[in-house]
Image 1: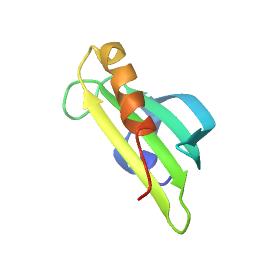
Image 2: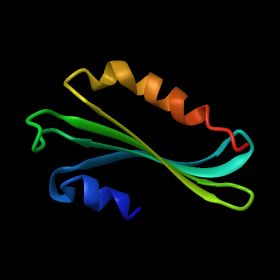
Image 3: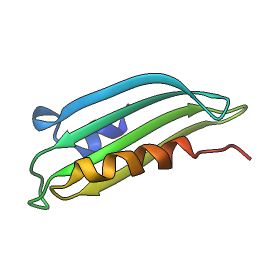
Image 4: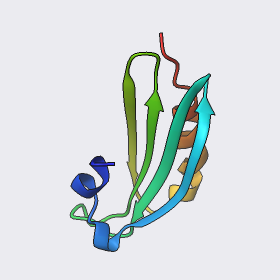
Length: 86
């Protein structure tokens, strides 16, 4: 979880949707973060996944900006859930 403090101002960030789950047969933790205003003068939404592979730990970060985050939430979720270890 080192990524979050480096990418978001944690004093102004809302965390949500923490879940331990299975992504295509691999153990994973997913988390969403939202920061209303950033140095970009727009909201930033992040979806994070930490996935335990057979021999590797993976970290997936998907960031999106804008005010219509709710429209993108399903697409970001689908992107993370499509992860496969080759």
